[in-house]
Each structure stands twice: as C-alpha cells, then as structure tokens.
Length: 116
Image (cartoon, rainbow, N blue to C red; front, side, top):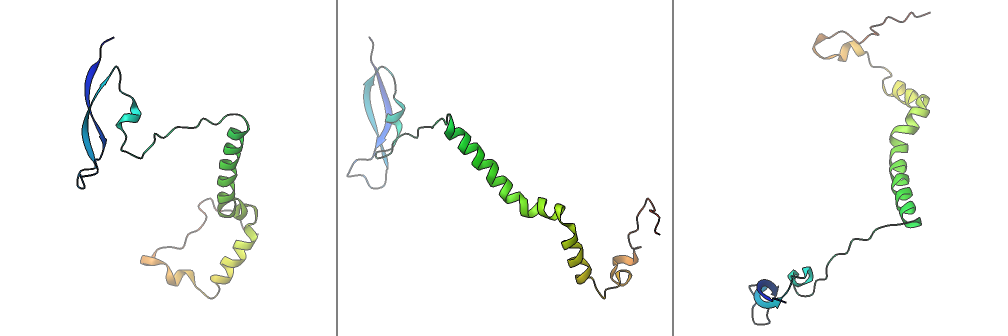
C-alpha cells in the first residue's frame, strides 16, 4: 500500500485572524471530501424522497402552483361577467375616439360579425 503526501486546505489556526485556512500535510491513500471543508462545517447530504414523502412533496408543489394560478387565470376565465361589469363601469362617460392616440381608428372586429 503506497501513501501519498497531499497538501490541502484545512481550518484556520487560533493565531491567524486574517487567513481562514492554512495548508496541512496529510499522508493518505485517497482524499476524503470532508477534509476539504472549513472547520465547523459538515458536508451537505442530499436526501432522496421515496414513497409517500415523494408523493407529498409533488402534491404540495402542484397544489402551490394551482393555488397561485387560480385567482390570476382560472377564476377570471370562469366568471367573465364580473370583469365586464367592472370594465363598463370604469369606461362610463369616456368617448374612445377622443382618447385614441395618433388619430388612429378605433378597433373593430376584422371578421365583421353581424349585429342584430
């Protein structure tokens, strides 16, 4: 078994205030990832969600997206009358031809639906 001398960063010594790391010699056969962390820090371990935890996470994520989208997209599409009434009330007394920018023509339906 052969040992290799490696130089790697380790935690700061007590007498050094400006440098948070110092170089340390270690004889190892391989480098452990934990040895490259500053003193006091532990490695972050990824958790794999399985079973009901995965289903709960996925359901919570989809539920959050649905709860955020409902008042913005779904409710106005299901209840357009409320918004049409508010729009008619806000535009009451305004002649659209007077406020049209650049003397442009007021929008009309290009397909010319017949009015009865």
